[in-house]
Image (cartoon, rainbow, N blue to C red; front, side, top):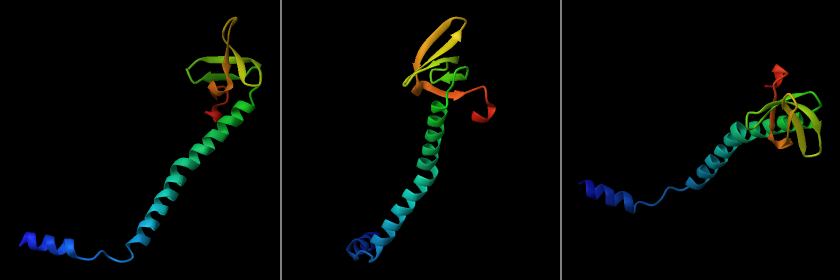
Length: 106
């Protein structure tokens, strides 16, 4: 009897209108994914870019590699940071992730 019900279900015509509900679900999934994933990431990227653009001499920064230092010189694409007494390294602006002097920026 189980084989008979399986054969009847296989021969039954597909339900009409299933295409619209599939499209609505796909659009709903995309909207939810954009709202919870893409939008916050864009906001974070804008904040990080604003931080990098507002750098000035004397700011304390952290690189993506975890090196803490103080900004000594700023150029178009790079920053010279002092990591210890008279130890300076030049890093890309893209390598700077946060300013640890201001607690509201962390």
